[in-house]
Length: 405
Image 1: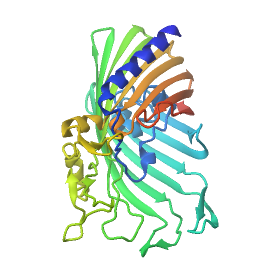
Image 2: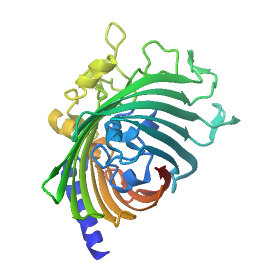
Image 3: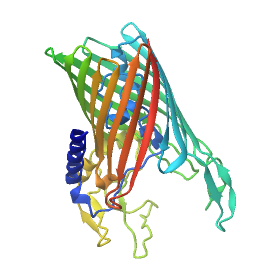
Image 4: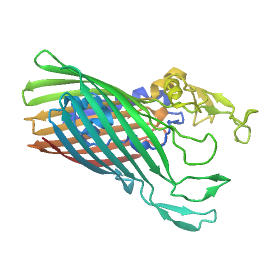
C-alpha cells in the first residue's frame, strides 16, 4: 500500500510539472456533440488509467480498438456494464453498455450498444416559472469486423449509428427552432500488433481512429453543426510473464481529439463579437473551425491559436501554438497484475493538461474470472481543473460482468 501511494504521488508531481506553465491561464477545452462517446464504458479500462488501445483484448475492445477482437482467446464473449456517470456530483446520470463478439475462423464479428441518460432537467422561462422536466437520452449502436492477418497483426473496421435527444422539443428562442433529436453515422479504423520478445516479455502496439462521422445539429440555424468526438489513440504495452498464469502488464497510451480547435474571436470594447463583411466572425488568433469533417481531422494538428487568457491581467498571452497542440494530447498509464489467471489487481493514472481542462485521475480496480464468468470493479478519483480550484474533486465507481466461452 505504501508503494502504491508513492507511485501515485510521483505521477501527480509529473502531471503538475508538465502543466505548470498554464497554471495562470484560462482553460480552453475542445467541446463536441455526444461527449458520452468518449466515456470509457468498462471497469478494466477505467482502472488502467483509461488506456486500452494496446491492452489484451476483451469484449470492450469496440471502444478502444476493434482490431483487438481478432486476438480474443475465446470464441464467444458477452458483457453487461453500467455505472453512474458522476457518482459524487449527480445521482441520476448513468451509462449502460452491452456487447457480444463471435469468432469465425480468423475473423471476429462484434456488436455493442450504449445508452446514456443525462438525468432530469428542469426547464424555466425568463420569469423563472417552472415549465416542466424532461430526461435527455442518447445511445449508440455499433458493429465491427476484425481480421487477423498473421500471428502478430490484425486490423478492424467498425460502423456506428448515434442518436441524441437533448432538448426534447422545447420551443424556440430568438427565431431559432431547436430540434428534439439529432443523428450521426460514424466509423472506426484500427490496427493491433502483438508479438513476444523472447520468453519472458510480450509487446503490443495499437492505433485507432474512432468516431469518424457526420456532424450533428440541434438547431435550424444555417451552418450550426457540431463535430462528434473523432479520437486518435496510440499506445504500447509490455507484459512480463513471471509464470504461465502470473503476469504483469504495463501500458502507456496517448489520445487526442481530431477536431478543430476553436479560434479566439475578436471583440469590441463592450465584449461583443466583431464580424466580417460576409457575416462571419473576425478571428483574432487561430483558424476557422467551420470546416468539413475530414479537413477538420487534419487541421486539428496545426490550428491551435497559441494564446490563452491570463486570469490576473484578463489579457491574452502567447503560449505558443506548438505548446497548445501538445496540451491537446491526454496521457493514460495502466498497470495490471494477473494472479493465477483468476484474480487481477489494477492501477493507473490519467492526465489532461491544464490548458485543455486540467484533470488528474488516479485509478484502481480488481477483477476476477472463474470458468466462463468474470467480473471487474474500478474506482476513479478525479482532481479537476487545478487552475480554477486545486481542491475540486469527484469520484466514480463502476462494474462489469461478462461471459467468455
